[in-house]
Length: 132
Image 1 (cartoon, rainbow, N blue to C red):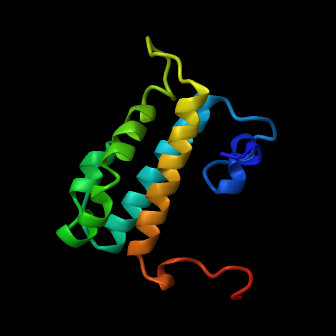
Image 2: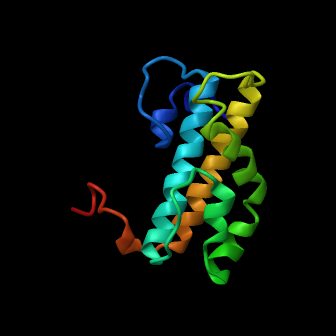
Image 3: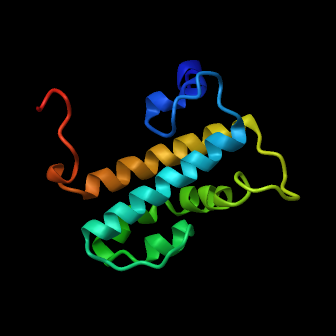
């Protein structure tokens, strides 16, 4: 992972621009959140109801067979990101989150983004400034 991506995750579209290097726990939380929002967007687009939850595995299980198969390879990514909905956000007796874990989380989130985007039609996305 290049230094710029690590220090400026806002440019990856994962989280707001904090200006300085984002703390590892904050990056992990934002990675989990983006994966959750993308899964919920896909479920909404497919008109599949889902419960109020932060559980990425539960959300992925709500998908129909065709959509789920393309996300099946992401199970490990979803499992890894799942823990950060609580551990990275709330105080507790958690193991410290390492820089390596944060970098893995960023890669996992990017894989989820790519997979979900590949399942949605082009018209599901807002037009870019070049298309307007």
